[in-house]
Length: 478
Ligand code: LM2
Ligand code: CA
Image 1 (cartoon, rainbow, N blue to C red):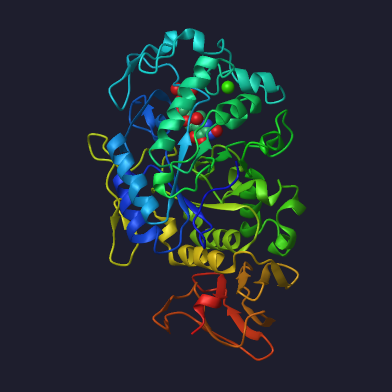
Image 2: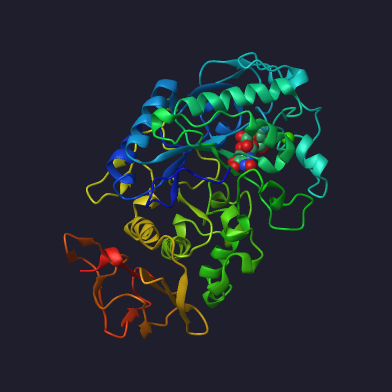
């Protein structure tokens, strides 16, 4: 089911990776709602095995379907969905049901449940040995049976062909629907048969109308399928069920803005590059896996650590009419396994907000970078239009317009200024560039751009500037 049930005029979601539910609720009210974000992907909510040194990835090892993680308990979860839906922001839960945990001696969960992982016994669900596929390792991506019926990195693989298992999973997801979510990210979807996913999703309830969903609304589904080509399993096998994460997009946009492939080629970014249809595609510059070198895309991926290029790539994603975009919001890390900011007892730290709107306590909050949240507003402003007036310099400078509603330019050259008079498609007047500044109460803290009677404007992005983008739109007119 591909409708994200976003409110009108909202078109991008943010993954608040590892955030606590109470912080997410605050963020919906004080920032995401007012700044036009459509929704939040929350980290897995099901109780997970506590792993030594508390790596972030322990959350991908469920021990039960109780809502009890370092993000909070069921009461906190329910408060969050209430407050976010009221603020016009939808909640999507990262749902882990391909597997339970790997093997851990004396496994204890974040909600106090225990399991005998070696015997595949999870009494808090309950699941027993019979509810799992026979042990074998995923080690041959040319063989769909191996990928789907064996254990991904030692994680005990649930027997999704079983009615009992399907029922337990559907009960868990239906409980979340009852509590007000709008849909799910399906973790490790490539490791599940599309037919099994189809049966599980057909057991789901309609969304809960008390949270403002229309009657009969079906949960939004987006599936994590890593398909860069060359394997037995293709992302296309999943598009009948819901959207699919387009990893080719993530790795290609990274290579482009890193300069490995001049951005003039982005002119037909999307289907023209062999990606899924835009209407089937969940797009992103980086996710929680490939920003730390796992998953897919390798060294092409851009993250907050390459901030200038990253802002350009995210800006392009938000300006370009292909796919449903997800913005990443990270915590700072040096070590790839390192968990979220936490105190000495392993409790996740609150997100604190600095006077300049950025975050503290170890949270990066890319979604609060002016260049990024202003491009979310750009996407909302140009929704429904297509690209016109594409311009490029034959290399790494490009510009395009969006149906009379927005204009954007990128200078990705190294050491070369961009100084061009370009056709904008906007009505004559003075506009505030929402990258170098913000348009507040009619006064602009950034570059001012004058669009003449012929729709042309002088556009300048110097190579030494902090940002390689310039963006103006109908709502930034002075
Ligand atoms: C995903 N998408 O399909 C997630 O986006 C990804 O983050 C998950 O892997 C994966 N699927 C399974 O849900 C992460 C992480 C792994 C980690 C697992 C489980 O990338 O490294 O595996 O979560 O926590 C870890 C260890 C691995 C060990 C395993 C089981 O790294 O060495 O294997 O736990 O104990 C013996
Ligand atoms: Ca499986």
